[in-house]
Image (tube, rainbow, N blue to C red; front, side, top):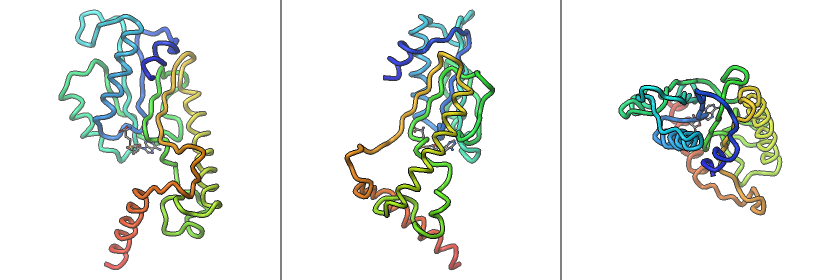
Length: 209
Ligand SMILES: C[S@@+](CC[C@H](N)C(=O)[O-])C[C@H]1O[C@@H](n2cnc3c(N)ncnc32)[C@H](O)[C@@H]1O
């Protein structure tokens, strides 16, 4: 789907393509994703050239974005153990805000990252969802608070990208979702329940020590 989208819809004239993976983590998924995007652009523009070519007609600059606390050392160590057909940079910081100058990006990609909210909904922290990290099995008020936070975050995310992406550029978002016919209270995300109880155990260990 991404390859098709690039071939059919990417509509920019440039010699240097600027691509970002937002919420890249430490690899290796990001490397496969960026390689696929680079390959699709090369095919679209019929270029078989790479950085080590004597006279490349198109070049790629990939920006790896994640929180400042992400271990970018691990990412770049594995990236450069292998010759990559693109220039690479880190762009630390939250994607819930501007990361790039105006109209500078050609493709913004993100996989399984924008489902992470910028923060827990404020109104839930102390009262209605105390001790919880998720809305699974909670009341409708809790669900609505998460929905409102998601809308707010997506608004901030999309308006930042709208400024950064050039006309004719692309945004690719992959995020987990639930079918609308499944009630929020029946999702049964047991993974989050287990994670929640582990976190609570850790907090209790610290507060009792
Ligand atoms: C589940 S991992 C996905 C990693 C990678 N994209 C993949 O497909 O394997 C989610 C990543 O998003 C990052 N992330 C979450 N919220 C973020 C934010 N506001 N700004 C930048 N990165 C964020 C996390 O730090 C984490 O590395």
